[in-house]
Image (cartoon, rainbow, N blue to C red; front, side, top):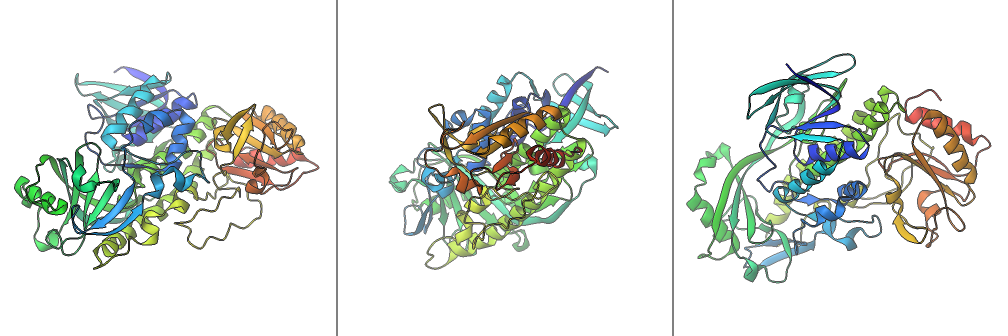
Length: 543
């Protein structure tokens, strides 16, 4: 049996697996991605690419390519008796509007559909030289050894079986993950929250949408469901999806939703009895609230739906998975590159698991909240934390040995899910501030790429010199800049020091994933010693 060797084997070719491949290539890691299906998804599934994920795509240089797949004029959420009937409430989709996040990010979210943007991710991943991508290729089994993972793969068209030896394996193989099953990792939580039917159809609804720029419309109509709203979702062009609940405990079955019944449901939802429409598919599914008891085992790690299954009420599932990969891959690069100890990889679970569990639980609550909010006799709109989630998008806080606390307390936020308060406290995403680099306007986020970045105030050149010396001794990739008047980076609004919580002689160390690892408000008499200790702790190496 033939055998290949690769540093990272990725199992699963959905958006999270493809993002993992892109990140590996970005860090110069050779990877092999295998996917058992013959091609990318043919279903709409994920729709919202939130601003934090778009920041990652910006880092990868694919933001513009992804935004080319954006659905135009999909800006607002609506509650109505029918699309053509009485409108009860309307709210802007802040997550995908540039004005909604302009103070916090250089980019903004994007509404698309998975079958549209997933081929873009695949095309971009194939352009990256270190990556290999094989569809129609199934993981049969794998075993972990002291220094590697040995996997058996099947090429489905030819029936050929071969062996791949990898330093690390990443399971991005979805809710029914074979990687997770082989590792014996249990899923904990609620396996079924609700049962739903997706009715995919084509129809020209422009006349009834009007100028409302509808992305999604909750349909409150007892003829459809007296207990919960239907959801009419715009998928671009003349493509739509209507989502309804069904209730097995009342004797209802997916097969009860015949094409004739589904056409009638759509016509009732639109409010046009003779609507011309074409059915594209009828799909039954159930949403869950499950999180893996652990996110890795020795040399194998889980990302995306392989380690969490959450309701789409809030649009976080795929985004959480891509952000999982963003956290994991820089650590793989650090360990494979020899500039971090292997124990750094344990911080993936420590940092991501609490975030994922919290979001999964919140999304489960959203199922109930959305139904109640949209089913009221005269709703004023959804519950505040259902669609206003800036704190959830930008405010994740990591606590692990890869973060060096500075003794400060987190900012006081009354509504931490809805509201975001920028802070450079260690463990938080480094805030966005517009800077000037040789006449070019850039965001601080544009500085965070494949290396650590030390940012110091205009009187903090000693921190920069010390950081370069320490990083050079340890073999750690680093860029160091002073910020302010007469510095490496200009600060035209004079806002950087306040945003990062430092004096002119203070400094902040930011990890490649854009999270603050360490901060000093002012100068130190032993800058090299302080930074050697910080790098040693963050990278799990002796100082």
